[in-house]
Image 1 (cartoon, one colour):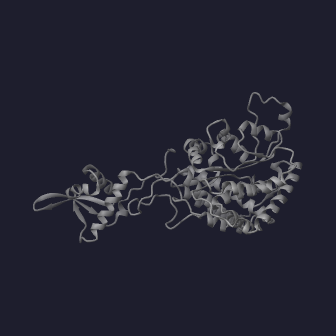
Image 2 (image 1 turned 120 degrees about the vertical axis):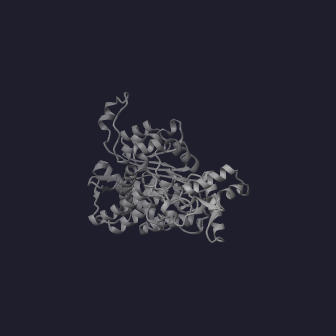
Image 3 (image 1 turned 135 degrees about the vertical axis):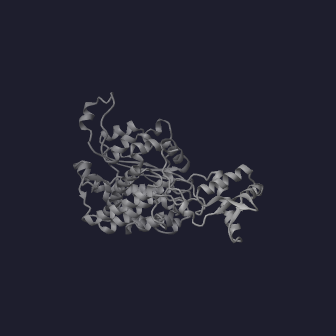
Length: 469
């Protein structure tokens, strides 16, 4: 239930009195929603479902959020689309990934939310549920008529590996097309089946729900995040990560109520989606409108999204991040709207809830793509020296020390004299102290003084990385 340790990712986080506030962050005191706060922001039915899943099965909240929204998105996206920022309709499909440790409840959560989908899709003539499928195989099935598809994995290690079986996780161009419900065009020389080409659908529903262990998720990001960001797909992918294990739930001692309501609603939505998709294409489904007052809420949230990303991304990329996240916010709002049987346009209340959920996903995304980096030894020594100087200064009328006296004390810290001098240089460079000369008994003495107002000396540098490391 904890928010990421570093809400926006990137950089180290030593004591606040040493490292200056980085530009681009939201105002002081801002904290993104935790996963529990995002669950609290869900619409009434989804809120009860998420909490009952936690109470009975003990799954971590992040696993619940990812698997719940993936399966609701699959059921809702076959019934409606939603209006985009430029007026063009977009599907309600979501691409989600949960990274968690062993015993976090990945499989139990995935299987529970999948059960009603499997029941509802019984009798569907085309293949609809995919596991660790390759990109060419998936595209052949979709072009063959699998217009309602779900990539669903309780344990997705194979999906993220570097072998042929992990090819789809790196097929960013195809995933971008499928995210927008567009069927990728034929581009292989051996795609010469004229009948398939003639009958291939021009649009399809494709939702992803990948659960995977933290280590495989981290390895995939370390190797492929740069390409995924460059392609634009990583901005479209919603991710959550958790290091906690599942708690012991009530199990059979507590009867399912909200979860049974979930099953019934999913069956209803799937039955409706099957009828609609048998008579119309995915890009002609009814559209849910977003009124101007609701658009204003989304624009305000988009500004927060830009501020969240500006600490680790260049300005242009931070803007792209916010635009893509705003699009996912629309889809989240549409999924909640459809599942709750709301009628008409998206309401202010629903969009407000969706922005809270999306903001939580954004915090997890930034923390997992740009994880905190360990503090270097040099910075640790600088922090240690600064703490010691402040402690000594409490007992001094005017806090200043001879530079030679400090260097002599280096063994007391377990450092060499050059390391002590480097620590002095570092805290002076940060603006927390300064070296001055004094005349004592006719002799020039080099002194170190703490600055009275260190903020005035703090340098303002660009904080976003030029490339992923």
